[in-house]
Image 1 (tube, rainbow, N blue to C red):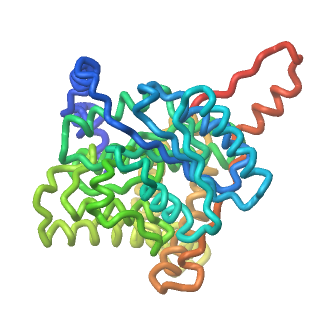
Image 2 (image 1 turned 180 degrees about the horizontal axis):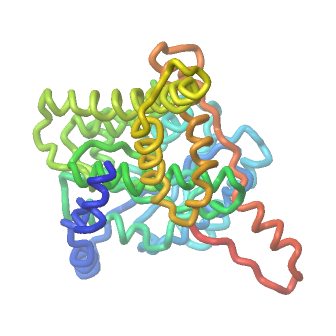
Length: 380
């Protein structure tokens, strides 16, 4: 992966560069034929971030009569539901087409909410659907930087955008998570792009062609990784993603490649090897004299791999030791999760929602400032 991404960075051989975004945007502006876009925001008791996400979605630069903001609120807190609905009404009064949807149950969790949202009568006129998690704050020109790809290329089913983080400096843990996620976007997705290999939908900050979702069988709640499940089914149906090669005809080899190269190697073997090598083999070689490892295996190769992973976030290179410890612990949890999934244990379909706290450090600092001094939250 490191060799491929180095080639990509040096020579600019990125998959999406073959599409002429500026020319496509000009054609769209000249024709004035703006497609109808559905923006879905699934949320569950998102007290700290619901205003930011709804406000960012409603402020997107796109003709206001050509997009619908659909707030899928599965909150169990009655007071919070009322607050979210009130926020939606505020934007409706400003002329934005906002639909507030609340379910009496959480069947299917996020996948169930997204599936039911697409079944609404007012969605029939929509050609594309944008999905934002409740803690996402898209730039105003997000639709202008994504929709043209789908308009000009009818074989594309998905445009996936990169994430940025507004609270990466919150604490040491968020800095380490930023390093891991930067590696995912800067290396894993770029390599998938450059080698024309499969990569999955990240569950948010993506634009789907609704027809591609229907062709793939729609959202299914048989797994808690519904985003990856949908991406696999859409890919095997022949739909292309922005960074994926030509899948006009899905062969047996393609099915084998998706199952073996991505799921078996990337999602199972990689975590197990990391855990056993770093947490068992190397410590054993230090504690047990009979176990010997050559210098390249014990020192050079792990050091090179670590630096190549951490270099994606240069500002956090000094935290590389903490990042190694963090990844070792995470490899244990990922290995545990893989075993639970493979054995279909009782917890395999348990959906745990992480509480969103936002940038609390910045908010605390702002609270200490004089009342007359304005504060501004960073955008996602």
